[in-house]
View (cartoon, rainbow, N blue to C red):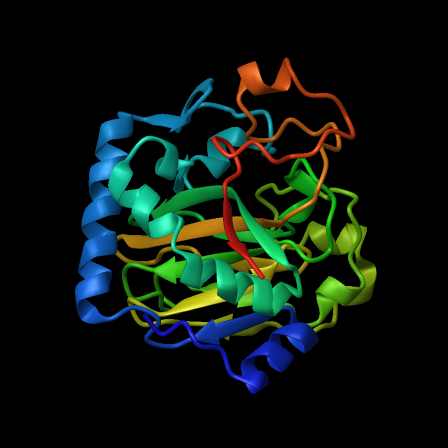
Length: 271
């Protein structure tokens, strides 16, 4: 695993709100990740996440235009909780250390992992933010996005609006089928230049949860698979947004409570 970050990469992330790391996984590691994700997705049998009775084809109450969004990608969350192979991958301290170095946090907890599978001819992923959906409020929150297949201009690679993480807020503009809807919320970004992030399989990117990002449609008959994980800096508290937290957990926490349950949000790195 190519897990050592250079000063230049850390500085690039701080300035732009994202960074691409080529050849993050070795050939053998990539195959291990692919096999684990395939197995974990099959085990789920369409269940989107543990603790909530939602199938991947159903409206999760988060995204607007559910029929359209269900043909953007299949999204399966917290696979680490239901598959030991994914758990071994996601709890890797080396990845937690990378997230800590990029974010400036002393400790890193998993918020949620998710497999994102763009099927053949899938719709584009509209410009959006991540952190406003989550149950905590922290400008340092970030995600890793690992390409399990080559992510190309043709099949749905990521795009970023560099530097937007410095100006966006925790208000949630949502995500729908109109690619440019976010610019009604943030008109100052309407003329910003986007940057594409095509990646070979086994490469990855990190992006800040307040960086505006999206993805192309899949204009091919093949799949574009990615395995991702969102990270929460240690010490954060519940802000009242349920997001992916299981119903049972929601019944026993209140706004302001520490999000430090190891069964839900394990600490994977501490400086």
